[in-house]
Structures are given as structure tokens and as C-alpha cells.
Length: 332
Image 1: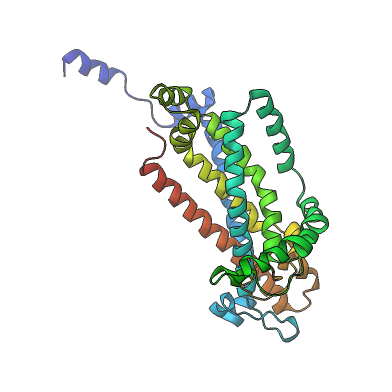
Image 2 (image 1 turned 120 degrees about the vertical axis):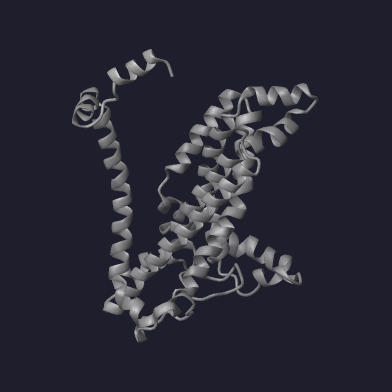
């Protein structure tokens, strides 16, 4: 290092201490940093308080039932015997059914709106989809009661029983009495509810793919569909997966619409046509009826279990997204 550079380094030392803090404060940097840090910390604080309240208020149930609460199949308020297994089963089954129905429909619609439809048609339909995403869940519940439940009871249910119900392995999923309400009906209503989220988010992600990627694929001889499916969708798959897990989070916590069409039966049944129940639906139905302390504590522990399921699934989603990005997601 030259003598001149050494002299400059000694003459202009970096600002530190109170003077540097006051200098940043005058420029607004420190104020903006403190405000944004406060808001970020508030989210962590709210989440921690939520978990804390659920943990404290479920103490009686946790000490009484222990880990057996997770796999006990009986829910009997008359004899203070409570187990979460039927509701965990119902929550997972209805959410998986909703994704199985909503993901193909949502992804195909998003591809059409972003890649194939004229811009004015795409914008109009996207506006309607955003309206669907803002519809209250109780409206979807009414839709399920007056449309989906009668169709399942008179048309689709008997059709599934007489066709798929006779198959060797999957037939068990479509056997037994058909009341119209049940796991499959709840899954259909949930799929209708979450598909606008998948379409809206996936469309926006697909629109962010650079035009050069499409043009390069088509210049190499690819068709419009090959360019979309082999170039555009892989480029945007991380965002598409994010939309799917956003829909999953909505399905896991949905209450009113599921309550109105699932049948509200605390049983585990392999048939998708049978009535069942979910964690959120059980809490909504029975919280005002919980007269005993143990009953109330068991319902609060159900809330804690739902929070735990959501936390685990979202954690797995983040791991899957990171693995996808490292394994060949969007190019750097």
C-alpha cells in the first residue's frame, strides 16, 4: 500500500459510535430500520402468544390424556373421553381431496389465462377469479348444501358406488351408505374454495417468466404448447408450488363451509362417502357447548393440534421448495 493511501486511511476513519448513530438517524435510515424491525418482531410475538395461550389453556387435557390424545378414536363428552384421531383424519382427508381436485383445474386454468387466452379475456376472467377468492366461506357452504349435497346423494354418489365401488382396491373408498354429506362432498366444496387462489397466484407467476424464454424455445422449433409446458412451467414451478401450499393452508383451516357439508360425525371411515368431521369444524360446533373444564381444554388442545399440523406441513413445503430450487428450478 502506498504512503498516500495510508495517510488517507488515517485521516478519514470510518464513523462509529454515537455520532454515526445520530448521522444515520438524521438521514432516516435508523428510524426506518427500527420501524420495520418492530413490525417484523410483532409477527413473531403474535405467533408466540398464540402458541402460548393454546399450550397453557390445554394443560388439563394434555396432562389427563397425554400423547394418547393423538390416536384415541373416541370423542365422548358425556364420559369425558376425548381423542383427536377422527378429526385429524378428517382434516387431512378433506384437504388432500381438495388439492387433488383443485391443483389440475387451477394449473390448467392459469396456463390458459397466462399463455393462450387473449389479453382482454384473460384480464376479465382473472377479475372474476379474484372475486371468487373474496367470497365468504359460508356462501360456499350454502352452495354445497343446495347443489353439491343433492347431486352427491342422487347422482354422483350412486354412480361412484356402482362403478368404482366394485373395483378390488379403490372400491373400499366408495362403498357404504350415501347420505350426500361426507368427506368427498367436503373435499369438493374445499376444492371450489381454494382453486381461485391457485389460479390467481400461478397466473401471476407465469406472467413473470421472461418473454425471451418463450421466444427462444419457439425459435428452436417448439410449438406453443411445448414452449409453455417444457419451458415456462418449469421456470415458474417454485411459485406454482407456493400457490398450492397456500391453498393447502386455506383448506386445513376452513371451518364454516366444511361444517355445513361434512356430516359432523366423529368417526374414522375408509369410505369417502361417509360422514366425518375436521378439527376446525369440531371446535366451531362444540366450543359453545363445552360445559366442563376438561371438555373445553380438549377443544383447545384440538386447536393446538391443528396449529401443529399446519406448522409441519408448511415446514415441509418450504423444504420442498428449497429442494426444487437447488435441483433445477428457476435459473440463476
